[in-house]
Image (tube, rainbow, N blue to C red):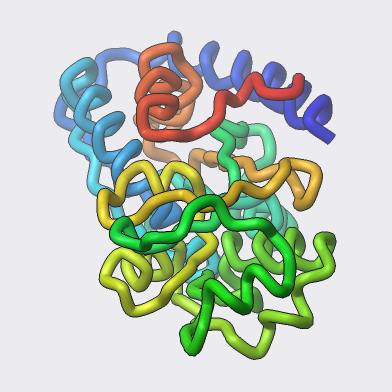
Length: 260
């Protein structure tokens, strides 16, 4: 599966880089980017560097991938969309809102279990008994599995580990990954399942368990240039470049080259 992503990346990045290199200076242009909430810290830093280098102002709207995708389907005037999974990007491609030729995977992630930073417990074994003991009377914070990518990944991982039935009735379904993270960080939930990059951004939590990559569909972030703004293709190409990739890695994301 990662080989497929690698081929897509190489093909689409070459296309976008050629488009970007052919563009004149874009100073004074503006971009509106819809992106997954888990990308908040990384993309904010990357956007600042892009503006410094090109003069293009970047405005971000961070939310659940599902919410952003629905707005795009409804005709929202967006220049770039960065999704937390391939599924929602595929939905937009099938509807004609996104052109596959202007899409590439720019980052990856891993799934972890977090607890409040002051939690006295150590590493958590991913078993039904251990989960029940650690949750106590509390609930497990996770993105809503019905539509939020991190929730879908969490359900898939828990199901493959034989744990879904044990916890499915004890969830706090959050609107997006950052809401689930905040619930744990504030101590309102004793455990949560989030992306490793989110855990790295929140000092109020600590990682107590990690899910093997094989327990769920690979977590990847595809980015698509939309509409006719010439700066959109250049921004997507920038996301695949060395400078942006270093910022993604600093924020806890996996390299797009993983597993190719």
